[in-house]
Image (cartoon, rainbow, N blue to C red; front, side, top):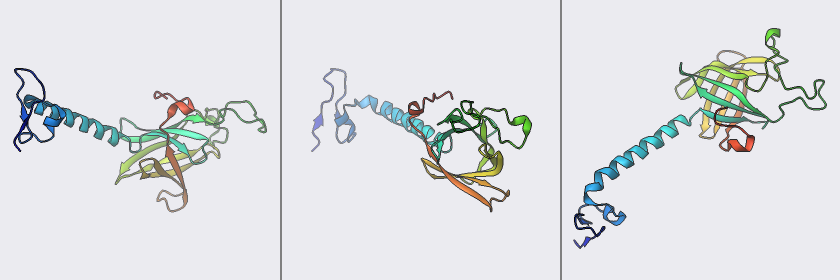
Length: 193
């Protein structure tokens, strides 16, 4: 029926009928507010898209072994880099010859770089997004001091397959799944890290 629903009991408020705006009358929207609702919806939609678009490769990722979290971010030059922001064991364990010492890049092939702390170390650099993948950069493995040709692809929104290859074509190498970390407080990481 064309029965009108009175939404707001004000003398100057126009009554919206179900025929004029199905659904909006039910929500309590006045006739003049329809455009405001549409604008709010579009703003929320664009915000949601921005959040989703940034959530691709950028973020905090835990390595498969659960001992390291890296932060991947897109730099001003559109290249992606990643640095270590959390270590399960910040210091070498009791059974290590350097027990109690903060972990550092001791196996780097370049002796001048061996004093760098692991926490804060860049381990992914110079990767560029192309055809939905990150490629062209490198991945550094501080546990053995080796730099690999790097590439990455999203497996799903919470998993990246990170590849370190011996050759620049990526034929010979290893894949490792890394997993998005959403609860940073669990690891005492702040958004600024």
